[in-house]
Length: 318
Ligand code: NAP
Image (cartoon, protein in one colour):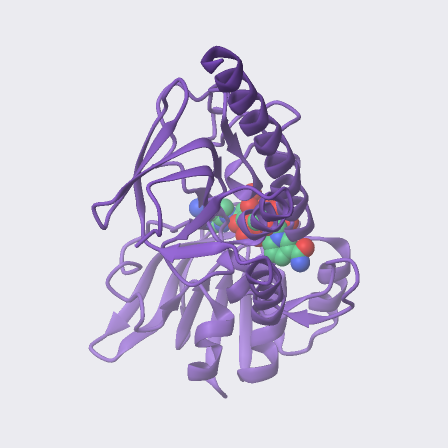
């Protein structure tokens, strides 16, 4: 439960963007609360290792997000665990409704709600979630020690997590729908050099096979030849991108065709005082360092917005 009803800034989301925004708004001496529905840290928490955040050659995803959190907490940022179910834009104050029933108001709102793992939407996927189907290698890899798994996808997450699983499991089939990977060259080189990873290209899963004990295999179709076959695996790790958590975005905010929030260079949306930062925002790339820097920009711009509103209120009051 939030300590107050009205704040200068409400931050939605406790990933790198939200926590960085929290650090900056507190340094600007603003009254702020950060609302996060799960554990703080966002997607970074479920990343095994981070090798491209400046200052850290290799740090665990959980450790990095905990550092962000502790840093924000060192400025006494108020954080609450609740889900935002709606934002109602207002002229002076915007309203933020929480699943817990509370309604908060603020001059500025920073939406930093990120995204969630995209589903393949093939038969057998939903019913086998937790029974061999996983969207998180760091969380579930341990259960597949010395077993055979497949990784589906060709982006950075699929490549990174195939390498992680190769250290734990007996064999990793890396299944990608095209003949070249989208993920970074350095990860591709490592995957090609990893003997425990077998690459299957131009191939899509058409269903996840299972019995009463969980996943037993995947049915595959070659996208070039049309050939269909079954591959026996104990687990299927699905990393086919993520979808922005846009359900909370109020109507009137401009969105891109693919569902991301469009902002100006101050991270301000088409509604004054409502900002967006990180993976929910339409931007060039999804990286932790980019989310953090957008959190900074949004916070600095939100602080400017709050000051301007308070100055206007003083003028009209007196
Ligand atoms: P992504 O880059 O969007 O890659 C998704 C992959 O899944 C693509 O290879 C795509 O194939 C494939 N795919 C999508 N839909 C599919 C379907 N229905 N069936 C089969 N395959 C499908 O997603 P991501 O890997 O989760 O990465 C998200 C963002 O985070 C990226 O910007 C990435 O660079 C970043 N990231 C960075 C790091 C890092 O720097 N250490 C780590 C993780 C993620 P196509 O290639 O054919 O489209």
